[in-house]
Each structure stands twice: as structure tokens, then as C-alpha cells.
Length: 471
Image 1 (cartoon, rainbow, N blue to C red):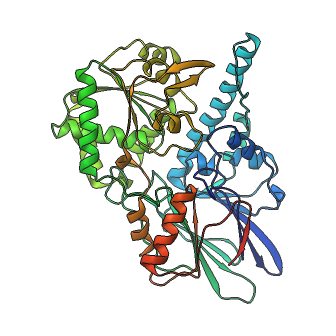
Image 2: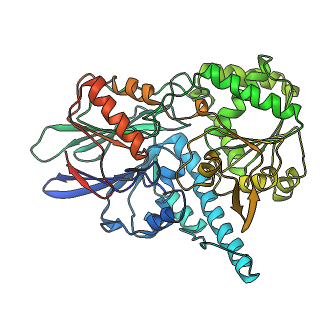
Image 3: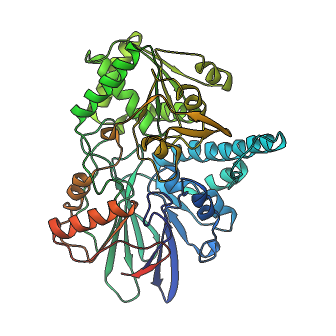
């Protein structure tokens, strides 16, 4: 067996791992995830790179969850010749219908906006590229084959797949793949996908897997510990209270899937417990609106506290003025609000979508607060805000950053170092190889050393992008 790491090696985005095995004397190849690189021009160049093998040679794709950095280039893969099945959980498939169509729409809108500004002589910088169309997304959706958690499926003679709950977002999965190569014993490969935090809002704790020969584990926060939920709540209450007192707005960039729903449930729960007064919340993301309705559909997959909070809100709808913004004109009208609003909008890294318009309107005013709740990739607008830049370029114009910037890491959908180690301790014996991926170099390096020091596992590898490893 040979694994080639095509992305998320030395960085967080662009998850895509190629696995090659020998079955009945024939080489077979499949992918686990095929995500989009995110964060600046370098990411665009990587997204445009051809695969080191023809897409038509792939037998199938296993998708761990719907986030764009894991799924976002699937339409491009299919347009380039991949015609096999794409396996994911039922909830992931429902989310994918929303995310990929929205991704195609945003790409096209960015290109058209740039073309208009170029004609007017007002555009500076790199011109965006549309990686695929809505039509190509529709064709890709026909190749999906959803599976339930815990359902074991033979993908082809010698390869078995089973999904377990990763506790990251709705539908997120740990992929357990059993392979029996020619005349060899079974080899179990476990791909963590993105592992969620234990005890966090909305999602259940990630499932533990007891046996594995090869483990591919994420390391987004492998070098740090998150704040406790109590500390996170305290900080969020302080930011919202002080901003509302100053008659400002709170703007929260949030991933439309997962993070937006977690924030909503937490804010409603803080009102329910009397820690916050009546709130006026606007969710300005059509995709987040659709994902929130979908979350209600998969109500039984939520944790018990979130189910109780949702039931309370249904009985007390006047406690929070919650509005979902549908059309563009409503979205533009939000920028006329000078205070008292909590605006949640995508994208989570501030590189696309309606959030950019809200930042352009709210960043120049000191009484406003920008609350960053998730990981910000190197090169992204969100990362630059976290790094306290004094101005940013939006829509070809320089915008001063006078609003306060707050990073609240305890709301992350990713496990921290302790959470990742706890998940790895679920294995009853040491795997023959552990590959640490999906992290910036420092995060991956620190987690790899912790695995060696605390779990006493010996073969812990930080793979390089495009390199292959025999297992």
C-alpha cells in the first residue's frame, strides 16, 4: 500500500490523500477527500495544478465531511475525467448539495465583479479564477453514494469502508478502510478527517476507534489547548455586552456549516440562562440559512444540551430576535445599522461571500467588534485581521481597521492538542504508522512529538506534499 499526500501537508487546507493498493494483480487507486486550497494566490495556483495521475484512473473517492477544504474541488475532479462513486454520510451529502453550488456561485460572482471593475479601471491585484461551474456541480452530485454511520460496505473485492462520527460538523466522519491486498493480511487505515472537541456545543463527542494499522490524523490545533467552554462564554459575554453598551455592532465571520449553527445555539443558550439580554441577530448567508434548516432535519444527531436549547427557543421565540437574510438588498440594508446588531456571515476566513461587505462597513468604526471564532489560514483576510493589521484592501479599496478584533478559540470545531491525544489513546495498540496532516508546520511538529513522548509510538511521520509513503 502506498499513500501520496496531495494536500493538507504542511498546511491546513487542500485535504486530499491518494491511496494505491494491489488487488488481483492490478493496481487500484482511490482518494480520501479532494479539498480546495484556501488563502491567497498560492492557493489558487495549487487548485489549478493537475493531479500526478489521470483522474479517470481513480476507482472511487471517500469524503470525510462537507467543508470546502475537504470537498471543494470534487466538481473539478469529475469534469477532468473521474467517473466513479463518491462515498460520504447521508448528512454530508445533503450539505454538499448546498456547499458546492454556493462555491460555484461565489467563484462566478467574484470573476464577474472583477471583470466589471477591470473595465472601469478600478481593479488592482490578481484576477480571480472560476474553478468550476454550477452545471459541473450538478453532474458531480449524481456520483455520490451516501452511507449511514456504522454501515459497512464493500467498495470492491478487498476494500471495505465504514464511517464513524467525528463530532466536527453535521455528517462529519472518521473513515475506517480495511484493505486486503494480494496474499497479504488485512490492513486497516483510519483517516480522522477533522476531529471535533469533546463536550462542545451541538455535536456529540467523536467516536473512538480501537484498531488501526495506519492512522492519518489532523493537527489543526496540535500545538495548543483551547480555552474551556466557561472561559469562552465569559469572553463572548464580555465582548457582546461592552459592544452593545458602546452602541456598536458585533460582526462574526463564521463558516456557514457547523460554526454558524454552534454560535446560534450558544447565543440562544446564554440568553436562556440569563447571561445575555434580548439579542438582535442577523444571519446573512443563504448557505448558512439552508444549513441551519438542515441541522433541524438531523435533530437526532445533535447533543442533548443543544436539543434542549432548541426546544426552549421554540417555546420562547421572543427571547431572541433572529432573522435569516435572504436577498441581496436585505443584506445591503444591514450595513445601514450603526449599532445593536449581531451579524453572522460567511465565509469563515473572510475571503469570499457577504462577510466582506459587512467588514468593509464595520471595520472603520471603533465602537464595533469583529469576533473571530475559527481557524484562519495563512494568507486569508481573517488571518490578517487576527494579526492586527492597520488596514486591509477590500473591493480594490484600502479600509482602515479601527474596530476591535477578538479571537475566541474555544468555539473551534476542531479538537485541541489534548483532544487529539485523547482520540488517539482510543486505539488499543500502537499503529504501524501515524501520519500527521492538516496543520501548519509548527502545529504538526508539536503534535507529532507529543504522540512520541506521551503515547510512546515510534513511527510518527509528518508527510511532505506530493511525497509517497509505503505502508
